Length: 118
Image 1 (spheres, rainbow, N blue to C red):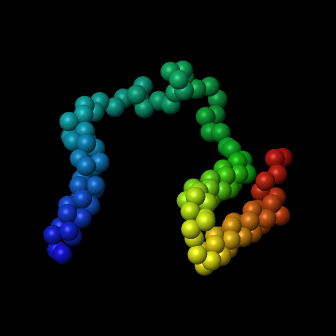
Image 2 (tube, rainbow, N blue to C red):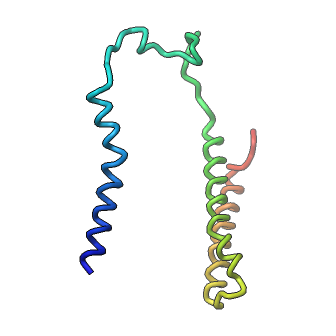
Image 3 (spheres, rainbow, N blue to C red):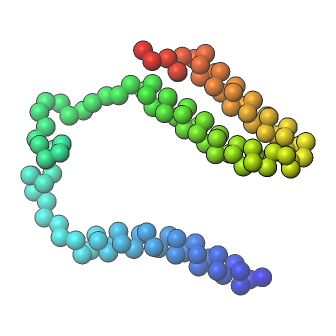
């Protein structure tokens, strides 16, 4: 029984070491010669003109989050829909509750005006 946990521990350790190792090696081996030109802000190789700070409306982020939530909903409902004829009544009721919770969230966002493009 402990042998399986050893493999899981090795896997978790490698999952932490594998992405961090190139970053640490690059920190020590990469040349570092900062100067004013390298630290200057540019866009596509051109120097910026005027203020480079651009504010976006928060509404765009909320709209993207709502889209992401319902995109994840589809990912959760797809296996449910594929095995629908083999599910017991309890699983069907759980699926309906899941959908009703998400519909409630959509209705809340709609009533708050998060889906209005103004």
